[in-house]
Amino acid sequence: MIDLPKGISRHEVRFLRYPQAIYVVKELPTAAARRDYGVLRIVESFDGPAVRPVGLVEDRCPDPGAEESAALITLYEPFSFSYREMLQGPGFGSRRVQMLDAFAYLLVELHLNGVFWGDCSLSNVLYRFDAEAIETIMVDAETARHYPEGLTDGQRAEDIEIMVVNVAGGMADIAAAHGRDLDEADLHLGEDIADRYRTLWDELTREDVIATSERYRIEERIARLNQLGFTVDEVDLLPTGNGDRLRVKLKVAGRNFHSSRLKELTGVEALEQQARQILTDLYYFQATHDGDTPTGKAVAAVRWRVEAFEPYVARLAEMPDVADPIQAFCDVLHHRFVLSQRAGHDVGTAAAFEDWVASGKPGYPVETPPADPASTSR
Image (cartoon, rainbow, N blue to C red; front, side, top):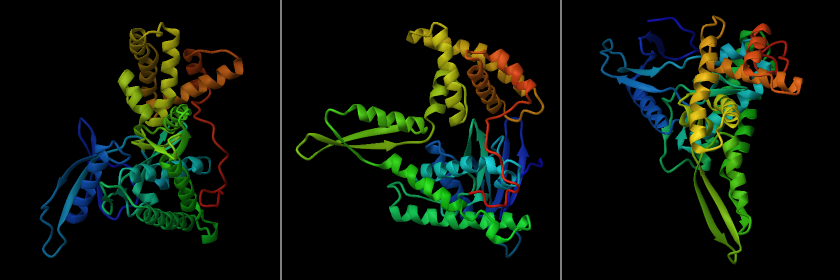
């Protein structure tokens, strides 16, 4: 058993280190553990944003008279942190918008796949830096339910309402911990997440009506959704009116378009925004290393991994102050972009890497944070 940072939990949580991985063991009532494990398995089946379930241990022989309990085992999420670590850190104000977007993306992706959470809150989510963004990961699914036929608008609205109330309560707790009055807490955080959720949901699920001569607009719509990270599974075209117009309905899958593409091309695993950043580097390498044919692109992809990716990630992994080598590699790529933009030409990864180290390993530029994380930052 090892000691690792963890957020507030109603249940006992332990971390166990084995050679192959670190596991999280959470003890909770058997019925809740079964629901938690079952929903997490479903989310895993569509590669959704949740911790990965490993096993469920029942019949733990509790003390006489005690409630029957079980142990849920999940994989530990490396490089993740709790909301208290983020909100109480010096950079929360600069990360607020990223957190809002990430929360909205998390709920949208779950709802698209028929998952009703029922207890979405700040403490039931883990966070990871994902290039210039933040990734959110569902941790606690004991109140969640899966509806294979999809959620109704009423179920989605109920889940959002629960989230708004829970997030406001979490921000009130943060304010109290800092000795602040309730009216100084960022109680609007949940409402901001809800607004972003609705905007994103409309973008992903709306139906467009186009002329039969405007089929290029379908490609534009798909490209826009791919930019947001979502994969389009199906496209339905339904004739309307007298047949001169089409109703376009898209079925959107998970938010892993770029990470799946990167893994397909190179075998490299990364988060969605990290993959989007890294793919840009790969495409440039292919364009400048005889990658103008399918065979040439495949060979260039192998060369990119061996020559342009793995050596830098290995160097980054050896640095004691670098927690996540893939995230740090993205920082280097962004630093290279900034230096190249200033110089008016490509400065190259080697020069950018040395300058990045000499400059204190800067990350993506963010806003100036407020004086206190508990204060309102609207």
